Length: 163
Image 1 (cartoon, rainbow, N blue to C red):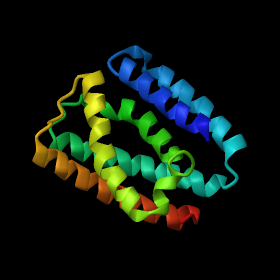
Image 2 (cartoon, one colour):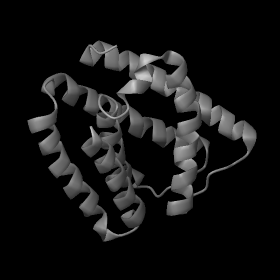
Image 3 (cartoon, helix red, strand yellow):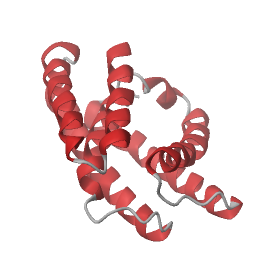
């Protein structure tokens, strides 16, 4: 599902570019159009996938709320406004573009351990927020992401019936 992957990164770009401006609505417009397209044409398990999207998006926002506090990112008070489109799209990639990572638990854990902190580091460079490259902090953040993605795998199996 290339459209899924491309749209995720396009929304990520829009959020990074416009997170501090009134143009953040562009990310929401693209997200709304993609959600319509996705649930109308791409998925045949609409209810479970919609429920999975909602749960992962809420859990992701909670996860990032605590990341913001614990890692002192110094995100604005309304960071949920610009994180929501990213988490919604990320949750949709898990059954399409990123579904391969759930086939092997080791691949899942290693990908989460490396990819989670890496994504925050890249975002910190684009969006100018604090992200520590202090090794213990990176390792701890990697472990948090591995635990989070393991939980996502369990939820995916339960809600979407996908192994």
